Image (tube, rainbow, N blue to C red; front, top):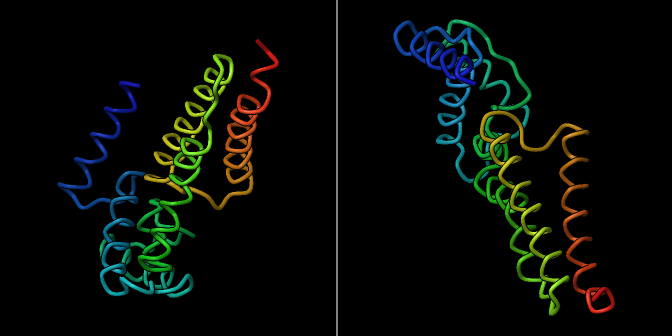
Length: 173
């Protein structure tokens, strides 16, 4: 971990002092700057997928003297607002946070076993939101088949655990 932190700090220094975007961090910083520029031009509607990617290539060439052509901006909110505007960014946040909120609102067990199962399911949902949120802040939140399937599987599992606590807890005691 300390070696990774040192490498990241070194990459940041190279980017700041030499405007070198060849490292993973440097590339992301350029992508984020370009994404914020594009979002400022198209805040409500976004630029659309094709135009956002075209503008990404132009902007990264201008900023880093090289074309960075990715399918996304390596940040879920910047990616959402550049392609679909503020409404899509809100939808991305809700996709991450709504399941946690819904689980807290829905799970109301009355027994000790039910409360334990509810606590496990809430911890699972919160942990999932944290992990996928952090992943989305530097990469892609959803959009890869395996990533999407894992996110849905974990959330379904959390709701099933809570459901078991709501329905069957009385018979387990």
